[in-house]
Picture 1 (cartoon, rainbow, N blue to C red):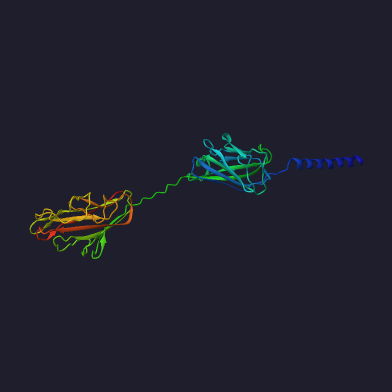
Picture 2 (picture 1 turned 60 degrees about the vertical axis):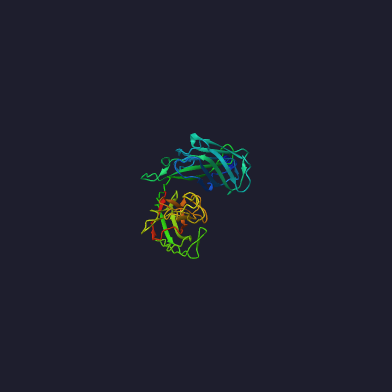
Length: 378
């Protein structure tokens, strides 16, 4: 009887000893890191120079080292890992790290890339980093190369639009990757670059608008009481040494990349219907199509030879030597009255025409045809 009781006591004592041993050695059971995820600065397949930010909430009171292992499948921690093709080669480096509950000293952690196992190994340079359960952590890796879609799990049939690989996170309380880690598995989804394609067709509208000249001023020139239309510039009856001025308003809207030019010219000098005398292009005392001058009276004394002048002015800032209330020659050569080197929305130019005859100009009806030429450049 005694012997049996003693044996029972030994059995009880042995049980207590086993329980005591378990309590001392297994201070922490494996837990799942909460709110774990990773962000990519660029999700394209095979993209280089990518910055990856890993976030998780700590489950232990200390953090000494962490492993981030890149795998093709979300296998359980500890199972074999098929490398995903993620690479930290080249400029791959541990970037910033962050703990919300306290300040982490500069260079508190160091990281190394283990290419053979496609994983980052990060460890504290201090004994451990104190934290608290539920504290958020971020570890950043720069210069990473994304895995290829083919190296990850992708849809069937394999259209290779996206692929998802996985990163196993193991957070250890010690600095030598020992002890029981808390774990998480996060996913990295890489995508094809999607080309967005569109073609914008050219747009160009050019409008000539008549101007009611009475009391109006364009380019600094007081207009005569002449109302122009889209198809006429009716100067009417001319009195010797009394210039007249009339205007057109030109409006352009375009999406050209290299702008446009608008030019004007006459098909020939204004010529009389009965006597074939003409009104010449304005020359003043040296005006031409590159040099403008203030209006002056015609100087000729033989009808048809500088006894009448026809000139043009523009307030467009893109033309050669624009000048307020000054006129260029208007002849059969194209003269640019509006010009820009980029696109324009409702850009308005005022073109003024001046005419004058002296007492030597033969009395007659004089006409010519005025042309506008619009030339956009795409």
